[in-house]
Length: 69
Image (tube, rainbow, N blue to C red; front, top):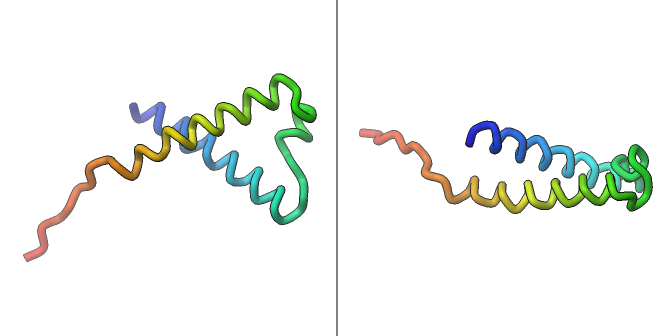
């Protein structure tokens, strides 16, 4: 699962950087690299979306709590 978590996190970061570029500079890096709504662009957007949904599970995972005395 650690590998899947790392891949999901990487895709979420890629998506966040792309959205930041869109928000600040009106520049869509994924579309610039792979074409405007080509099959490759759609696959990348879909993978980023799935990774984002999977990453929601990070909030529900058990956290190690150190008992302070």
